[in-house]
Image 1: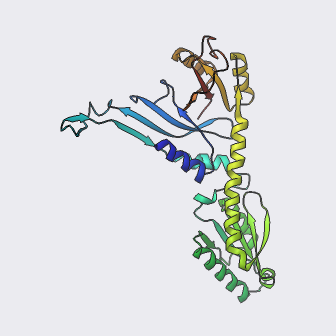
Image 2: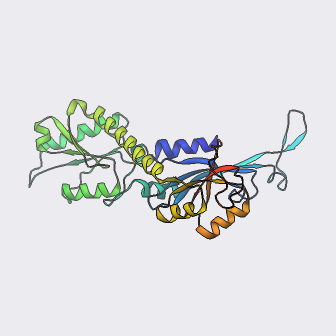
Image 3: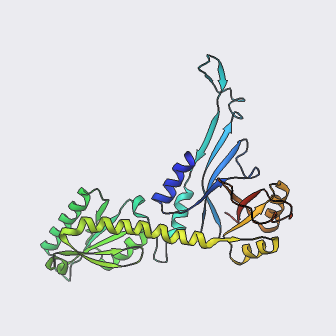
Length: 303
């Protein structure tokens, strides 16, 4: 249940696709009955553990004397769990979505979803522009959007554009004299730099639509990269070649013996990142010892 909460957070909010599954006995949390995990793939070909959930059984409640009174009016040792995510999620988001201009923050978690930048030419301080900025910010805020107006006078619009791109704000709203004349605003997407002229009466709907499109686009791009990062190996030579040539996840069959798992780690640096929650169909013998396989697993190098 907790792992599913984490998957929703990571995929639906952060636009970061993951593989879910169990950790091997060797990789699980020490003392747990089993550990479940979320694994993402970073652009450099290394896996990132995004979160874990552990079933601790009674292995910790007994030494710490954690008991409860049951319906049978007898005391029992509790069955406990442990789970958590950490700051690494922010690092993963930065690595997955950002580009040479700076951060790219998914709209659903962005502290500022849209920044409004007024544009004045030379010494012109158009009251009409200022009024339009105010009313536009008001409309978007009332619609529940996180909006910021960059009214700083010491910086040029171009300087502001660059700064907000660096900070990864999903959408920029430009308002200048020409926009006032045409009863419109200009929207600029952070993810692809696409510009769109939007009429005043459609501002709220178009901003919301753009933010939704950006969210979906970021996830789709990352999902495609995740799928492309997964290769399959049926023998150890191919397994090592895939790891060295392209990195990413290598899907391989494993006999379940810790000796093979340890040998693979020592020889290649790759570990079992996840064993699917639902068994996948075996397609070869064990990748290392060539004996009968027990599980399809996903290996990768990690941080």
